[in-house]
Length: 254
Image (cartoon, rainbow, N blue to C red; front, side, top):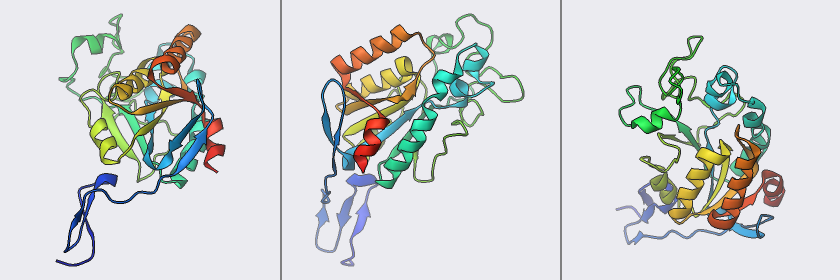
């Protein structure tokens, strides 16, 4: 066998094999970053950090999408776009993994129980998951549909990671946890919509799985009333993690 190391496995936890040995834990250099946050300031290891962007999709953030048809204020779900673009550029420069976590349901919806479908169309008016949208835009939140696509203003790059989800939490019945562990990620930055629903419950499940969780409030939005935002922020800071912002993180990256 050649002395040239070769990888066994994928991600940052891959082994390195030579003719002499297998290295189970390749050396990794920490990248500490000080970050202003609530309820207390933090120091995180950027080398073991990933950004999870939740549901920045046409369904919730674009004219003609599900939220728009329901009369929601799209300004509140589109507000994260500008700060996210600045944050994405900074994190990519430092090699931080970017995970796009989006609804992308099966066309036959066989993995969705009735309650999951009812939540999207409680009045039964035909705007639930899989129902057709006006204007030849396909079904609501179906995989590879216009509704499930990331908004045009946010442009994923080839090295980004895409995970489809089928529930409010992105960890339920998805490979998200396995992917993050293969990347040797410990700390998760959270962004996206809706803050009080899919972002919050994905963050809470990440906490239960042992990840360190940081919500970036200026990169998150919701169409829900302000009291929902207040309660979500309170619960995150009290029980599930920390709250900071891209306005604090981007300068800290240098």
